[in-house]
Length: 239
Image (cartoon, rainbow, N blue to C red; front, side, top):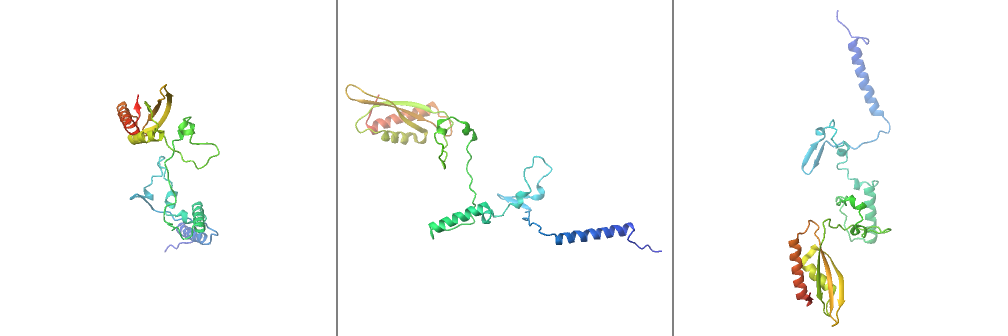
C-alpha cells in the first residue's frame, strides 16, 4: 500500500510550512507601506588603484575600524544634492557670482568641494609664546595662523657709524639678501652720538631656521658676509 502524505504528516507539514513562510514573506515585502529607500552598498572600495572587497573586511577583528557605511558613501556626489549642506553652500556661491559677476566665471561641478589643510599643533593653544598670542586678538575673525620655528634663535650684534644716507630699510634689505629666510629680526638695540657729531647704531640680528638648529659655523659665516656687504653697500664704518 502506497503512502500518501497528508497535512498532518511530518513531510507534508514541513512542505506546507515552507510554502506558507515563503508566500508570507513575499507578500509582506510586496505590500510593506512607506518602506525607506536605501543607497545600494558598493561591493568594492577602490582608492589609489587599490581594491578592497567588502568581503575582505574582518568584522570579527576588534582592531578593525572600517565601517560598512564607508562603501555606501562612495560616489554619492553629496555636493550635487540640493538639500545637503554641501549642495546648499554650492548653490549659494553660484547665486552670488551669477548675480554680481554675470558671464565672467565658469562652473566646474565635478571638482571636489572639500579642501583639506594641515592642522595646527593643538599644544599651541596652551602656549604663552608671544609669537603665537600676538597673532590673535579678541573680536577678530578670519585670521590665518602663521607658523613659527620651534628651534632656538642665534643672536649676533653689529655696530657701525652711520652716514646721512643710511636707512634701516636698506640695512634690512642687505641682511635679507645674504641670510634669506634664516634672518628672523633686525632690531636697533643702542645708539649714541659722540662729541664730533658722529652717530653710532648697534643692531641685533636674530637668525633662526624653520627646519633645524643652526650651527655656530653657519651663523659666523652669515654674520661675516653680512658685515662685509653692509660696509660696502651702505658705506658705513664698522666698529
